[in-house]
Image 1 (tube, rainbow, N blue to C red):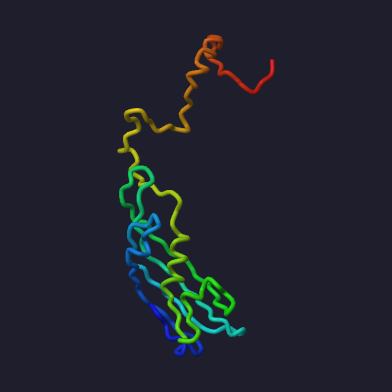
Image 2 (cartoon, rainbow, N blue to C red):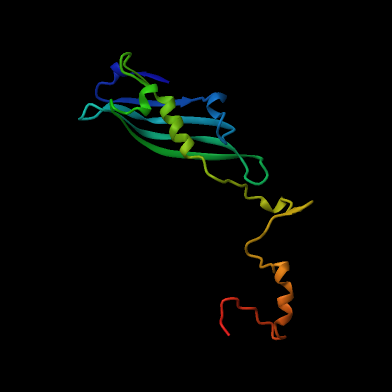
Length: 168
């Protein structure tokens, strides 16, 4: 969405929904973006810098970290962004000669920061834990390393566990 900055005198309020095409999603884990909206305002601050404030929210469709099935991940975050004349990153969105600002790119930069590193569905009980040549390890379950299995014979019949850190 391109905003004509000549309309921004005191404050310019925005309440818009956005659609991002597949070119944005190309190099990310995001499979789809739904219901992306921005509610906020744009204004010039006392230093004559352009300032964007508001809340961006929506839903990402992401792959499950284990099963790769689609998972809906709702997001919502605040934006407090200052655009000054010396900011090199923003030059592709802010055209001073035309007096316009494309807010979609700024929102996109912030949406990408909200993507979680891992996400999994809560119905993990249905997942197969063992396969041909692989298995999922449980950190809570103590398993004895097969290379050290012979050492368990040295334990006495009282069932004490071997303490690797103690000195004799």
